[in-house]
Amino acid sequence: QDLADIINSLGYQTILIQEADQEVWHKKYNGLDVLGLPSYRALASRLPSPKIAIYSGISDFRNYVKSKKLMISHGVTWDKPNKTRDVEFVRRAVIDFDKIVSVDTNTISCLRTEFGREIGANDCRKFEYIPNYVDKNIFYPSVELKKNNIKILFPRRLCVERGGLIFIDA
Image (cartoon, rainbow, N blue to C red; front, side, top):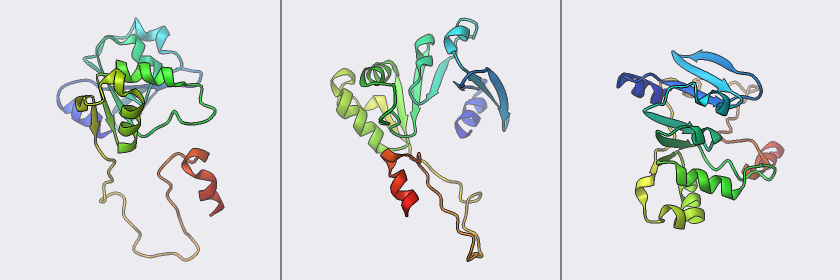
């Protein structure tokens, strides 16, 4: 939402397009139009070409936009054993993006290590690190601690690769 607010303040219209399972849907979130598309290919020719396309993660959508492309990565997501996306898919995506912004340094390190030759291992301009943050005016600990009401926050994908089973067992 913060990124959309900045883009809107510069006079641009922001529409968030994300992959949907089967049906097209539209929602508004704090004034931001969010579109879910099962197949971007079918609609790509009907949509106006954006000044810049910003993607959350690696997506096939990028193949249908000719403008500048920016990817925002929230971590390595292609490491799941049953993922159908292969190394070649990730390689093509990384080469295709003009800029990659990551909230963790692990992703940048992983991409540079794996695809350094193709993107130029010393080309730091392709990557930007902007750490996750939290608004402490909205999220803060409760003043009183209830003994029988413990809440645990797990700020990652709860999966085997990220220690999900260890977390659940604990």
